Length: 112
Image (cartoon, rainbow, N blue to C red):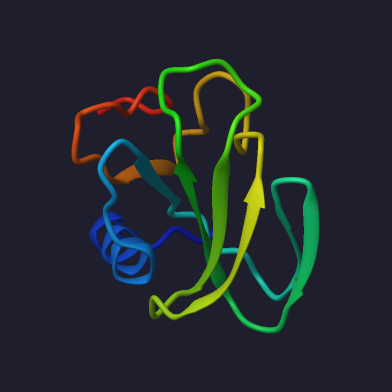
């Protein structure tokens, strides 16, 4: 597994999706290699290394609720977004996920 630097992943996610009040933006530092990438309920084919970001639109509430996945080039280019109603994992996210933007201090899926 290849991990990008935390700051690189955070900057890519924020550059692509920005920080939005009342939401939390997470990004996975684990690089997805070309092939099939799962974004919520959907699978997509990608032809280059990429990162996955996830915006929780209702942090602190029970699932299922609105959220958005984004597939990013490792350079931060926004490749596509997918609306969903479920997190990447129920409970805490794996250790490779970090908070990219949390304007209101609501992050509850990763340690701060």
